[in-house]
Length: 143
Image 1: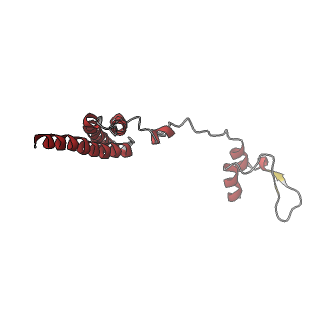
Image 2 (image 1 turned 90 degrees about the vertical axis):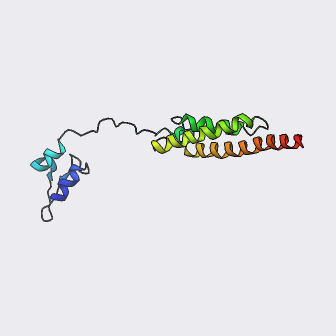
């Protein structure tokens, strides 16, 4: 009987079912058993609306909207690949990438670590390449 009560509480026993014992040919309705009637006629329990977990937006996994420094640093780093433009955008991407990574470390629910690392790497390489070229050109011109 304990198993049947458990099944009834799980919704696995319909109210129209009948119970048949091993040695009797006729069955009795489940609603005639007091313990089962209480379970089967109880109002259904429904969970309230659950709050949407933060960061469950599928776009948030691709575009870190809550970490604008990492996002803008990424785009600045990509546009800094244009020759000459990287003189200014390279250091900006490097700084924005560091700011975005620090923000991600302070609040792990923020996304954008990959964007921040791309901004740091691109910004660093662009800064070295563009400013290295400028310094090499100045040194070559003074000789």
